[in-house]
Image (cartoon, rainbow, N blue to C red; front, top):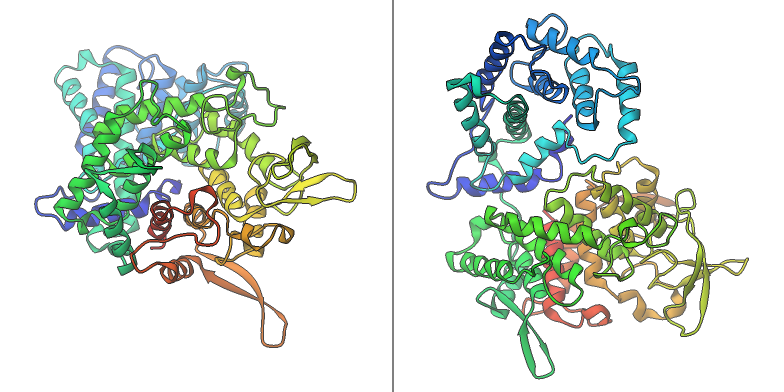
Length: 591
């Protein structure tokens, strides 16, 4: 029940610590916030339904009743069944009486919230096990964007910033409670149930923050001399918050580089930024918002990639005014997914993927950026976009138990050569099904297996985590094992030695960035690496990847504060600006 604490918690705690460092900044209240409003609303529900002779706390609505009961079970009074207030007993009976022959309690929403009530309220074990099991079977067959209670709590945590806390996020619901308390006859039970859910979600989120750590004692995020030098370089490359690209003798402002530059600059803790530095960031974010395309995308080339990068910058900015733009961007990214609506079937290689935009084929690099952006814009983890993305993710993984794809693909390095591609079984990942920038393994039967390599295996781990796949899932454990077996910061591992040394360094700084994002998101604190002791015997060493990566990157930094891939400039890593952005994003995860 506490899974919503993870992921956003580090940002939440840091943001709160920043607030404490600023004069007149809002202060987060502790404990059971919104107690009065929750108690008042429950009293109004009990009184109005009783006076009107209605069967349950949600009036005659199964969905509203389920929501109200689920919220009451999680609020500060911890209502329970059976034996608590008569209204709860009557409401639970109402739910039971509305069970359908197919195991549902109406539509998907009503069924989901009835399950929540039946799970949360009972004191004595789980008396509704059979009903819950059949209702869940019904739900699996439905298409629903419903958000669970725990997801609502996570949404509250995702919105917490240095000056926005759970007490503020229940403001609208509190206003409605005052209206209904003054005029009970005007209550709308569906709206009241939603308001109660929001107030209780804010209360639970606030208690979760209390339990995790006292924000007043939260340590500031790490900010090193190396990061300060890199920040100064980035500051020197922008104009009014905008970063430009030079091609030939012309320079022009670019939304992708502006997005990456602002992401990197926002790695500096807000409490440590000067007023001028903050003004630069704010101006750049406003420029991005002003240059959003009508369809919700950003940029003119590789629009999905550009849109995802801009979403990352705007999301870090945390300005509520960016909400409508982020919602439009979310819709655009969803439109790029290769699904039935665009003519794809589940058996197609690219089904569930996202590419650079429009009708382009999908790849794992674009997909991990896209899934991250969809979560950042508030798309719930149970949305079908994530479930359908899993089809493609599995086809990029060299794991025979889940990879069902094989077929003909053009050799990316030899014109006119066609490969008969099939999955390997080492747990790592390639660029897209049948394609690898690290080369191929030729099997005894003449088929070719795309080699797993570092950056894509971390992209796979990151994507699985964003899609809600648990850490003990065989797909995740196989990817983590590949990472452990191939751990290195010297190169982007996995390349075919026959391709030469240079190939090992392609996408090196991109590799560092995705490595840090994936391990942090998946809550991996150390990587177990097998080495040899002084006698040559195998020995397992636990590597603190954050400490190792920070030291490695600081050792690679150039005198002017930049990073540069001097051994392979493929994928634009001959540009100090891009490599420096990659390194700064990676270092932000090395807390």
